[in-house]
Amino acid sequence: MQQLKANLIEHIKTSFKDAREKDYPNENRLDFYVNKQCIPSILTYAKDRLGYIHLSHIAIVDWLEDGEIELIYIIWSPEEKIKMFVRTRVERENSVMPNIDMIWRQANTYEREFREMYGIQFQGLEGEQDFLLEDWDGPPPMRRDFDTEAYADDTFFHRPGREDAQDVREAITKRSGEEIPDFAKKYSR
Amino acid sequence: MINDKNSQKIVDIIQNWARKQSIWVLAYGTGCGAIEIPPTMTSRYDAERLGVRGAATPRQADVLLITGYLTTKTLKRVIRVYEQMQDPKYVIGFGSCTINGGMYYDSYNTIKVLDKYLPVDVYINGCMPRPESVLAGFGKLQELIGNGEANGATKYKENLEWYRANQKKIIPNWVMPEYNW
Figure (cartoon, rainbow over the protein chains, first blue to last red):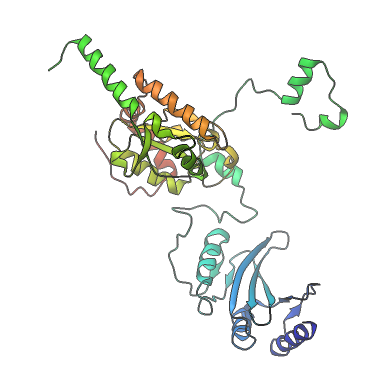
């Protein structure tokens, strides 16, 4: 397995100069950072030459502090039993990604969801603009800087809470005459 | 034809008694609460002994069960379904999501207070309500129907503009028919 993994790393590094390897202790997993322009070519290379015929998942991470969004393409080779994580980062503002749904058709679903939930545009992506949300005109809701609570407050009605609502712990101690221990006071309202 | 006030009362009593004995529920699960309906309907709790049973289409049903959270997308369908139902019709709000949003109180896509959009006759609280409480809710609804107090549908007709305004506030792209009852 170690030998196989080293071979794969070498293959990818010779074909893609800018691929940076991210070290990961598990021996059945490979991890690469690449530029976003390389994504279609590295995935095609892995699919056609290295036997990575299965796209398991596309994950997404919003790095708000870095101003970037990370996309992780997780592909799997049933013969070699090694997972490959291909990572790339795009800027958060006006983010455009190359489209890979001609390599795996199921990527279309992921990409439409990312377009709707994270506001990432994919070049030449086909499909209805509305996917999960209907009539949505707010900002992409899954981004970390979207304040869901504030949005819900001005969009929907809220039922006001009961006026006689009591803190359970305080009510019980008052009734039974016990003292609240110091460490528990911070949990009271 | 009966015009006498007292005989109308007797007719109402018989009508209400008949209505409360056969509550047909529309089999339309809107949220996660729909998972409590199979045990309620099947042999263990057997709601059919109380006259509660499933109906296939909105036009055959008396009760619309809103089982749990309603997204704005589902609300559109639910309104459509509710308006297709024939009188007499009742709505049961099921679970804390319909009462105050429950665990989705800060969600960007679910409504929090159901009775601003549809007239609710009975609320069943809990997350999830057990089949016992579902049956208790149906019992309460039967009591209200028997007393002639379950008049959500009349309320909806009379205050249609208010309900429509609330509904259109969160469904901007309105493609449903307008009624003039």
